[in-house]
Structures are given as structure tokens and as C-alpha cells.
Length: 287
Ligand code: SF4
Ligand code: SF4
Image (cartoon, rainbow, N blue to C red; front, side):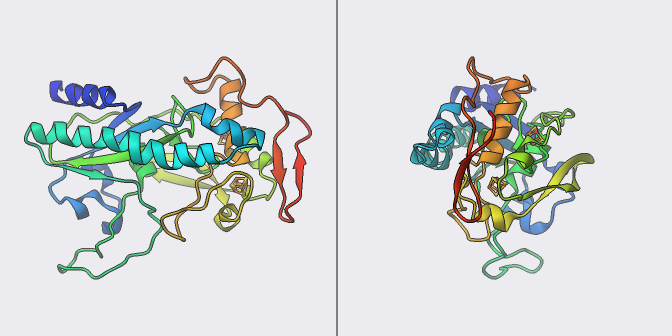
């Protein structure tokens, strides 16, 4: 217990906004191609580290006047600079205490297997974890109706990295309550009809059931409402946090007091802009 507390304190001191720990046993239902033990067979704990995306870096997209701030800050600085330093600090802390620590960046889990297996029974050498599912297993939150992972602190506004370790750490409990209140503002806000509220599927992780709408990912990949295509692999999911669907969700979560990190002023102050399939721009009828 004391070592786990020290580890979390080190992570927070190194800039983590969120720290969750899952025992590797919570990955029993995961295939070898996405299992932590395919990378580190002796792993006992999965440490999920989260860093918030500041609400303000979405402002330029929300106003429709500046898109690069979000792309640079949330797409590069938060994961590859700030959070990467936190991750290496946590790995160093573990190895200073003589536990092996494997730091993992968040790679697109939709990418197909690549390369050849080097031992019988092992998967090809591009094993990738689903970080959002790992965050569920580490107790940091749950999936919302729109398919995004959401925490009670920041809703969908965070990035994750992971450290696998052979240290047996104290696990966090699963997050039993949902941030998403099923308001469906995300589906209403999508001008391309990509979130199908009539085709709700159940995502089940560690026995926890999360209703998620069917999403037309091909449409999201081509969306010009603030979504960013995956830069690492063409089959990877786009980043939708800045898209009008998720920005509408962020506004709703703050207005209805559903997340802790709500600011003093509302996120949405003017009707949202939207681009339809023909490329025509219009404004929503109301805020
Ligand atoms: S907009 Fe409403 S229904 Fe959609 S994910 Fe957010 S809280 Fe859930
Ligand atoms: S990313 Fe674009 S197409 Fe996909 S749900 Fe959001 S607004 Fe709709």
C-alpha cells in the first residue's frame, strides 16, 4: 500500500492529472495481439497515466478561427512532451525501486498485425493495447454514448500513456458510475449523422456494461467539423475531441455539472458552426 501511494505521488509530482492501476488479471478477456503480457510476460500491474487537455486549447476550434492550437497542444505537446516526461519519471521511479517498467506510448490499436511471430504462439511484433479500455480497467472512467472514454474529472479531455511493471501494486476499483447521462447532444450535434442513436451497442469490460451508439467511423475520418484523422496509421481512429460532436458533449457536461473540472464561464457562448457533406458551412439554431 505504501509503495503504491509513493508511486502515485511521484506520478502526480511529475505532472499526471490521473493515475489508475489495474492488475494484469483484469486483461484476461483480451486477445494476445492486445494483451500487456504479450509485451512483458511477467507484468503484474498496468499503470495508466493521464494528462488533461486544457479546455482553452479548444477555443480556436469552437470559434472556427484557429485549428492549429488544438492540433499542436493536444496532438503533440500533451502526449509526446508533457505526458511522456511523466511516463519516463514513473518508469524511473519503479526501476529505482528495482521493479522493471515498460513505458508505452498510445498507438492506434486498430492497426492490423504486422511482421512475423518470432516464437511459436506469440503474436506479430506490433502488439498494442487499447488505452481507453485499459483506463476503464484501471478505474479512471467509462465509455460515453458517443464512444469516447470519459473521466469524472475532465470528461473526454485527456490523453493517456501506460507503464507495465512486474511490481504488484494495489489496484484501483472500477468506476461504477457513468459521466455520460445519455442526453444525446453529441448525436444531435453531428451534421453528418455519424452517431446512430437507434443502434446502441453494449461495450462490456470486466463485467461492466456501457451503452455506446454505433459510430460510422469512415464518416468521422473524413469529417471537417474539427476531427483530426489518425496520423499514425490509416486504419486508426480519428481524434474527435475537437469535433463538434464532442465539443457539444463538453459544453453539456459542464453546464449540467457532470464533471469536476468545469470552468467559471460556459464553453459554448455562440451557436456552433457546422460543415455538411457538401462542404457548406452553417450555424446551429441555438447555443
Ligand atoms: S453528449 Fe450526452 S449522450 Fe453524448 S456522450 Fe456526452 S453526455 Fe453522453
Ligand atoms: S467526428 Fe464529425 S462525423 Fe464523427 S460524430 Fe463527430 S461531428 Fe459527426
